[in-house]
Length: 408
Image (cartoon, rainbow, N blue to C red; front, side, top):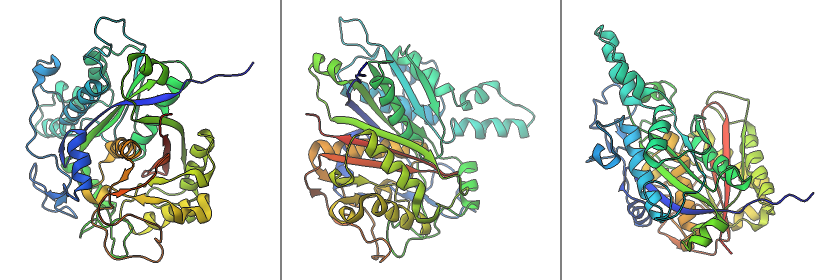
């Protein structure tokens, strides 16, 4: 019997980033070359490898807006605000169904590296003072944000929580799309979230993934990355269901793949073989030839070995066609947003496909002969984008990739 699969559209976007609150603030900031990196002020950065981070400044949260009696962990706050924007953007109400209609079968797939990190800091402080708090421990739990989101938006379908280091957000998009494609859900709220905390940056400083200078993606003078916080959320929806509602579709999720290098805790494998396999797998599930791809939103962390490995992976899969596409990293503008990174980069890729514009690789420095692709180093570039990829890689060897395409 011939199998039929549902097409998957992106109908809603929401973002909280170091550039501000909202997907439009993010997009306009990227196109305008703004940077959201600044000196940490939410806690004392003394002793860290770098005192700069991608901090969400002037943050305010009203728990009553989400029918909560008290504020949840800060990372969950970012997630809720981004989710509310995405749901409204998709033309859905806060119970995830059109007004006056029965709600579709809705699921949620969320991603985080560190869960409720500020609550963890509070809990550890309580332990040291012999006053551990069950409330702060509860807010730290990795499933807490998922429970709050499901209760807030009346999500009763399939739900999952991913923690696959910095590939988590992209993997969440891919898995959410599979739930729709296979008929397990009509719509899925997917996204990533994380917040900055002393213990997180202390550990990442010890791993020496953080630069002591600045973040220069794909540049000869790169020396490491800089981390930040925020959340990105997308509403994925069965395309037929979205068309019945007569709502805008940003683009479609055509394919995805996820794997692990099985190589090293922090270093990429030789030639970026794991990233090459994940890009190849995503293209195969999208039923695309490598030379049909027009754009890649790369992981582009600015670390010495990763940027070369990612460049080599792209060339290994695309061959000569690698020199005919645009490749960008947005981390120079907003920093590395950990569990939220892949979700935010998926949002930006969707906006690129919709608007046919590629944002620049902000803070690109000196050209590196080993990184020799078209990284769009100045201003937004108008170009044809029928198909685009978003690639993420994480500590521990996790890789994920999604392929997006224009809705026909």
